[in-house]
Image (cartoon, rainbow, N blue to C red; front, top):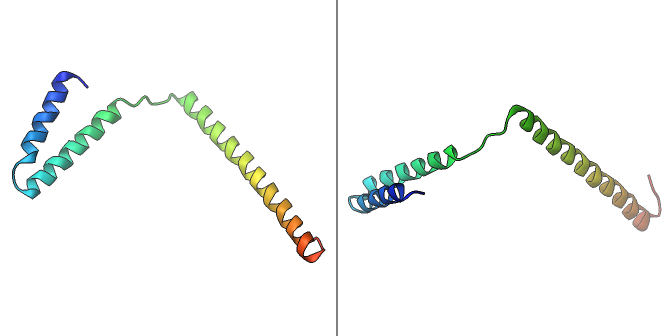
Length: 89
């Protein structure tokens, strides 16, 4: 944050600290929205190919994790059935 924007934000905070609760609420709300918009301007958006690559990596990872968890669930259920009933399905 630059010195100018920091000073400007502190001036707003000083003005918002006085007055009735309703004006302080809306002052704080507008400051919050301005800060959100300032942060969103800093976001670097991925290009089309990057987005496809990231999405593919996430989907493949989720499928692998689902397979691992499903395999463990199936194996442990068979083990527990064998231990407690002596039979497997």
